[in-house]
Amino acid sequence: MYGNAYIDPKDQKGKTVEGEDPVKLAEFEARILAGEKIEPQDWMPALYRKQLIRMIEQHAHSEIIGALPEGTWITRAPGFRRKLALMAKVQDEVGHAQLLYSAAETLGKPREDMINDLITGKSKYSNVFNYPAITWADSAIIAWLIDAGAIVNQLANSKGSYGPYCRALERICYEESFHLKYGHDNVVHLATGTAKQRQMVQEALTRWWQPIMHFFGPPDRVSVHTEVLMKWKVKMMSNDDMRQQYLDMYVPKIWDLGLELPDPNLRKNEETGKWEYTEPDWDEFKRVINGDGPCNAERLAVRRMAEEKGRWVRRAILGEDAKYSVPFA
Amino acid sequence: MHKSLDPRVNRAALDVEQQIEPLGELDQFQTFEVFHQKKRGQQHVHVGIVHAPNANMALLYAKEQYSRRGTTANLWVCPSSCVTATEYFDEDIFETTNEKTYRDPAVYKVMDRIKAYKERQGK
Ligand SMILES: [Fe+2]
Ligand SMILES: [Fe+2]
Image (cartoon, rainbow over all chains, first blue to last red; front, top):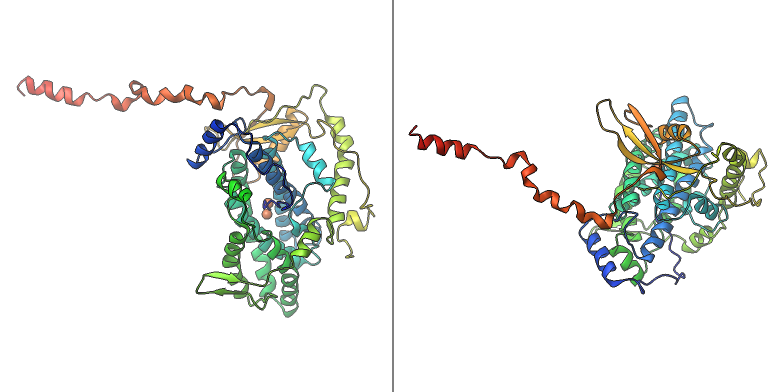
């Protein structure tokens, strides 16, 4: 899950390509235009490197933090088979984090620095994981509809220009398709079950609708900044385009199960082909992403605990001649 | 404030405000490049990296990361620092390869010659 980088609209630093060698920049842009990938050892503009590190790192954090709300359901999952499947999914998510940290690392930021930025709250991760999964149905909704959002985002990003990120995403997308099927299966099971089960899944869906609408981020402001990131194939789709694609793919499937979405204005305008909806509360989004959500504190605390409690083991097994060098690909 | 469902928070009573010493250099070890062979008889293919303190642990992590699905016959790992690579900016050193058509079996066409020869012989 979920590489939709949150770009702080107030961050004015590094927004230009000023100072870059025009010849190298032209070569770089021509390569991207020709559909070729950029590899870690290539020359690249500072802004490209910076934005990619930020985006891939946030994506990695989202995977590892995303494992937490579902992870707490492993011991409580109804039945042995679901426990096994959920364990596999959670392991995949942590594996995704590792693949993505590696991709970001090729750009020159060591994994230690990324984890430090996560646990001190300096780096962001997908906002949806600051909400709790309070019932089994919530974990089912996450596995189906949050992972579905992740897939829309990740498929778009996998066509981007940075080789290591694309390679990581290719592996990731393959595994996400299992997550989606697994989640859908769980939701269908509840939605076609007893009245109590239906109620449970409906309530979970209602709780998650706003975070889902937040998932792709606020509507993009048209800016030179966004334009250049699109030209360099760092950002592949606008937030609104991804949201439209998502609604188009999943709202019919949700309605098909007879479930209701808590937005009376949600409908597809047949003339424009676009979905119309009530804007979710973007002030809440900002508040939560900046630290004030129901689970922000505990998500980071649990990560800090894991880092700290495992530290002596890592120190004990670290070889004396260990030497770091930036990985190749 | 919702009641946490995470046993580390609600049962182990984790202090959520507690900060920790930042991770130092090599906390996450060095990296190993991983090569994966799907089946006996196939080539090993580079699939990515793992962080590990030594080669044996790297194999263990590589197994978890790169052989969760599908088939695997064999894995190799080697420290990233052991790889020597060509430079992308020297990519043009490979450019003449396409012009070396004499290396290509398909450019050797003798049938026309044989046919002409036979015609000259009055066949
Ligand atoms: Fe994932
Ligand atoms: Fe997933």
